[in-house]
Amino acid sequence: MSEIRISENSSSEEIYPFAKMVYELVSLPVTMRSKNKKGVRIEQGKLIDNDYTGPILEEALEKNCVIHTIPRSGEYKGIPVVVTPVHDTKGNTIAVIGLVDVVSTIDMASVFGNYPEIVRQVEENKKSIR
Image (cartoon, rainbow, N blue to C red; front, side, top):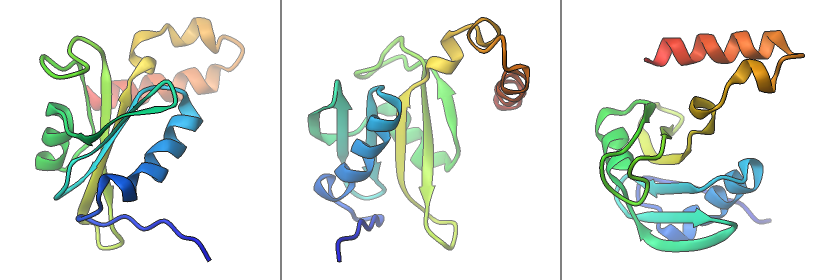
């Protein structure tokens, strides 16, 4: 039986399947690393870097929280990103995963005009994280 396990010591090879799955869901650049080892950067469906970390991944590891920001340095300098910790069953941060944050760059009302409940939820979420 195959399985995917992620720990604070997972290598880039071990976290790649998880990061690739997220990429396939959202079709946006994805970065991921474990707490103790550098990780991966995936763009256009391809593994670009298997020894990757970035300033916002590092910050999310340190602060143990979701971060929505525009990096001032690194591969995604000037591009909105969102990074979130991945926790184990005890709540400990074991990894972080990030992607380009297109939600912060689009007008939700125009895209989801026929779905006011979705717009309301997204807008409320955006307000709560600022």
